[in-house]
Image 1: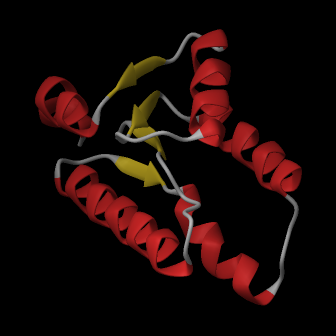
Image 2 (image 1 turned 180 degrees about the vertical axis):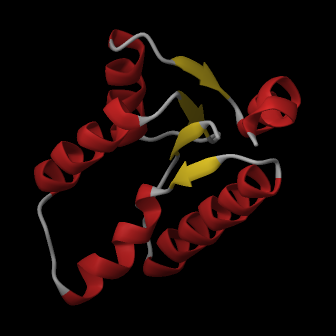
Length: 112
């Protein structure tokens, strides 16, 4: 099973925007899982933060550990400084970078 790290916008100007970003990531995760991928979705850390807040740098260090364990990096559309940083790290590690649609089209048949 191909392990995919899913990156995309998280923070927003309002709490509602942040929630929409989390839901969009969960929708993308479901699509990838349906195509046979094992997905790590850092957006779920949003819910940890509501109960046990962590710093931005803490999250980034955690994310780098997971990126290094994945086979591919999947990027959702939209501006995101954190995702830009994660993508640069993934590329430095030599991971291929895909959109959700590209990953499903190009790898979905072989992911399972």
